[in-house]
Image (cartoon, rainbow, N blue to C red; front, side):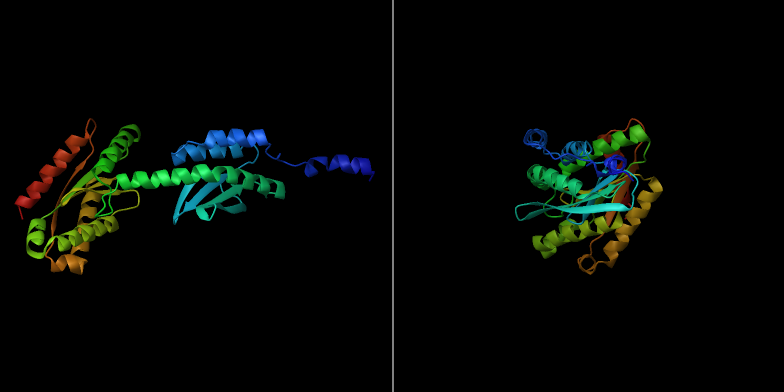
Length: 284
């Protein structure tokens, strides 16, 4: 074949799919990323910039044994994983799925994006850590009252918008005061921690547990029904009975639950669950 025709025929195959980022482009991207402390917003900007040059079918971020789906899409056979770092600190792994195999130019381009992304991502991770500490009960490791009040508003909104069943379950330790009086507050703290573990083991990853204060705990189950809430409560009681430390201290609990009904508020849900709980306590 004529060399000229050969070159023309394969010109598109040799043409790079991407262009290196110039200094002005890098500065502009960095300006867009800086100051964004919410991880969702930060990743949205980051992904939007990458997709200007690379077709990303799916993007997953792995950090601390937790996977976050950043970009939804069908998987393909072309996968590439990058470790994100800022200095000596690892910021997780980004797993890209693309409809074609990335060439060296595209891999180098992604490395450039990652260097720009590392600083803002580190700040956002630290912001989330501090924010989570403020929304966490230190003793039990569960969410605190502030966390519950924030999350239940979101759950109620989801129930109204998508008709997803929501059930609030309240637990109360029956003889917690006696444990503190008889065995001391160190054992009382142990009871709180062990009971919190039982709650976490009784629910799905989509459900959330909180300590409201003292010996009062609450769950948000979604999606859920009265029947599924009762099964969760039964699992909690079985876990308590199977826990040697709780059994030795003669710990038991009562519970009450309320399923979301149209027009319910946080207060009305808690009120119904509370009334059921105290009815159960009186009947013991």
